[in-house]
Amino acid sequence: KKKKSREIMEDPMHQSEVLTRVSHFCGWVYAIAWSVSFYGQITLNCRMKSVYGLSLDLVAYNVVGYLAYTIYSQIGYFDHHSGTGAVQPQDLAFNYHALTMGLIMAYQCLFYDRAGQKVSKFCKIGIAGMLIGLVIAFFTTTVTQTIENKHFHTVLFLGYMKIYVTTVKYVPQSYSNYIRKSTVGWSIVGVCLDFTGGVFSLAQMIVDAGNAGNWNLFTNHVFKFNITKFLLSVESIAFDLVFMTQHFILYRTSTTDIKGTEDKGLAAVFRPMKDTEEETVDTEGDTFEIEMASQNSVTPRKGSHE
Picture 1: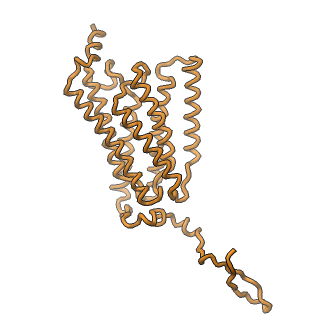
Picture 2: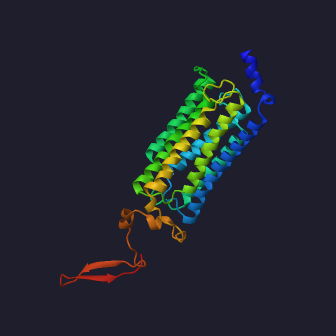
Picture 3: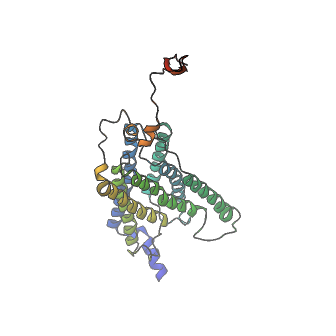
């Protein structure tokens, strides 16, 4: 009888049309909000001709994370027995767009002024570790099948990669804001949109669970719980609250209006003092040689270009 009731709830004909529409609404709102959130940072980088204030670790993590999440969602959407949980069309639309935006942002980091920033060793080691883990998961669970565990296989490992990326990618950015005591160069519009997306993504999962007969995500045996999507929503909301606290409360007085600085680039305006002190002044390419006079005095002589 219990099995029969589950089959009834899994049948779309026995689900609430109202809740289904609410789910679709939440799904498209979260997908659009998360997608649009990229444009604020990309536009800001274009205006500044610089990626100063943007953590390069975050950009590197984004590319790897969204590539893994796109493959994970693609497999889960077409193979309902892959173990990913429920994957909606909105999830696919967002993933393809997010991966594209991540690649565009990486392109900007290659050609815009980075103000001396580099991808950290910790980030490089983390990405290398994920790729090595993916290879191990593939050979042990797919090729040789020496490990048979429903909570650990190649597809789920792709989801775990995205969870790890989201966990660590925001830490360098929040730390960068803390060190500079400023959020200049970090798009607060993108943060607010990301927060909105996280709320509606979580709301869609709750509505889908309710439409399956139980509003509790963790005890609903009919609703196919997508652990990756759930954790991504929660993590996004948590970190966005940190960024909004930094921007609107902690470093509000140090937030500078960037209007009129696009031509120079913010890196020229907000570059750390240490960097500017190390710069040398080029006097129109002229060199000055110092030679000893016969009277043991020092006389500067203007030379020619080399």
